Each structure stands twice: as structure tokens, then as C-alpha cells.
Length: 144
Image: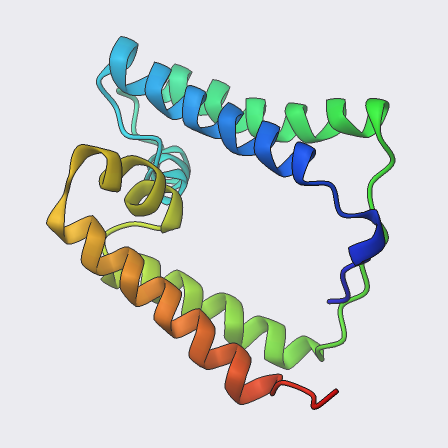
């Protein structure tokens, strides 16, 4: 994936981060639930009846907010340079890691760390370290 750094705006990143934090805080304060996307999606896919309404609304809100954003700002051009087999393997590894780690980055990083969860701290550090190592192995820094 190539990023158009000349089009990057820290304002949109900041606003997006604040909105994610506010949504996570509202969900835990008013619903007592963690905004871990992998758990929310897994429960919807499994057809768990309890909480299906708020889980479906949360997932639809994620999709709708992306569509709403495209009305205000055109989506950036994205070019994925990996082959399909690599993408499939990467997706499976993320899914396995999410299951093995009892959650994803949103659950552990955004929701677990503010609650001072030690398990979330270890998970988030593992996610970050794995990401750094993966980038360095598959996309080494170019000398400039």
C-alpha cells in the first residue's frame, strides 16, 4: 500500500482518534460493553441473540461513518502491492492472532489500556512489536 504523504492531515487523524475514543467511552459507560470489534463481529456472526441490536448498530455505524466521510472528502487512492495469496495468509494470521490474543487492537489498545488492564498492555506491546518486525522484514528501510 502506498500512502500519499503530501495529502496526510494530522487533523483528520486526530478527529478520527477522538471519535473512536468517545464511541468506546460511551459504549462502556452506557452499555457496560467493551468496543472490541473482533468480539462484537464474532457475536453477530455466531447469531448470539443477547445484545444483537447494539452490536449490529455498532457495526453498521462503522460502515455508515465511512460512507458519510466520502460525502465530505474523497477517499484516498489505495494501491495494494501484495499478491492475493499473501493477503489471504496475512488475513488468516490476523484472525488467528486475534482469537489467540483474546481480542484485537481496538479491544486491547483502545479499551483495555485505559482500564489499566495488564493483559491488554502485553497484547498491545505484542501487536506493535510484531508489526514493526514484519515491516522491517518485508519492507526494509531504504537508504536515502
